[in-house]
Each structure stands twice: as structure tokens, then as C-alpha cells.
Length: 61
Image 1 (spheres, rainbow, N blue to C red):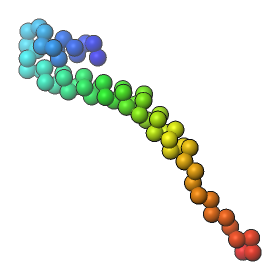
Image 2: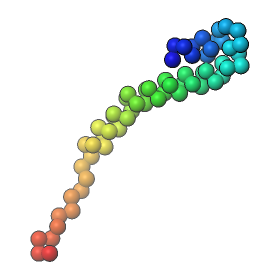
Image 3: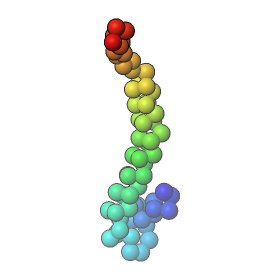
Image 4: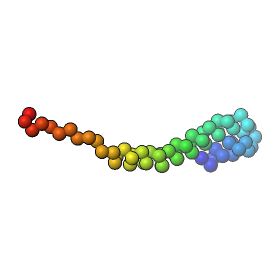
């Protein structure tokens, strides 16, 4: 991620054409890390604690 930072900021020769792509890549890496470490576990815990209705079988058959 840090290796893409100079390109995203436009430092160095020839960085201007790749600057937009570098910003998109850094944004994708940031959001995927944020979602995978925070949102996905929270959703897992939320849906794991949901009680599903149990349908009891008729003992008479």
C-alpha cells in the first residue's frame, strides 16, 4: 500500500498518467480491509444470534 502512495500523490516522473489508477487501487485496498475486519464479523455475529423458528414434528406421525 505504501509503495503505491507516491504514484497516487503524483510524485516522480511519469506519475501523472497512473495517478488515477493508483488512487482507485489504494481506495479499493482501504475499503476491502475496512470491510473485512469490521463489517463482515459484525454481520456474522448479528446473523448468528438470530433465532430460527423450530417446527416441531407431529409425534403421531
